[in-house]
Image (cartoon, rainbow, N blue to C red):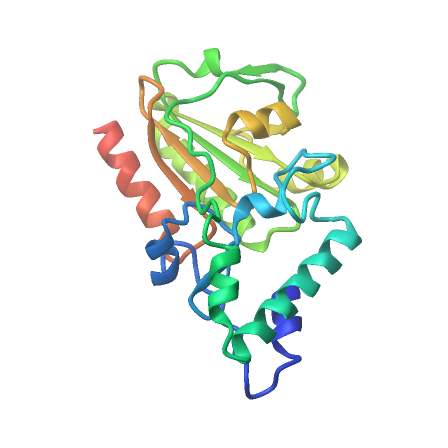
Length: 244
């Protein structure tokens, strides 16, 4: 993690802290609705959109596309500069520079239109899901927390049957790795690979796992980012209310 690498350059002066989404008072204060977000002291200096979204090629965020080494180097340089300013008593400069930071990702209020082909070669569209509670999970093969959630989603699908439609959409992962992973998981889920239009339709997927829950009318019931300890419990609570 680049933030941790930078913090290590300041032994005894800078402490690196990682917080779960939903468990950060700073995130709540700034109204951050997605992750990753970066704070130096109590100043919000980078928001999800700065790092771009999956499927993005050129990138419109300051450090997008994130996989570009030059963009990662730019982020490290900017972060070092901001830390140095705050350590020398110039927090006001950093605060002014980031006063207009857009803390939120674009949150959708209903199940968007999308058209994919699932891993079995069948069409997969939002129209097929009408009338049911829908859970859409964005995941990646390189995301350790995603694996346990995908296993859990298989048990949910068996529990609720046709009342619930679970769609697991992979991002930023080689197809052969996706197919290899899916072979070990529930065949009851609808498995697909995201394209750029789908990622954009869901409000720009900036990180995984990201879970969307929609009611029978297609309205957004809940969006869950990351893998906090209460992720499954929060999702099950919402599903219970939707399916009672």
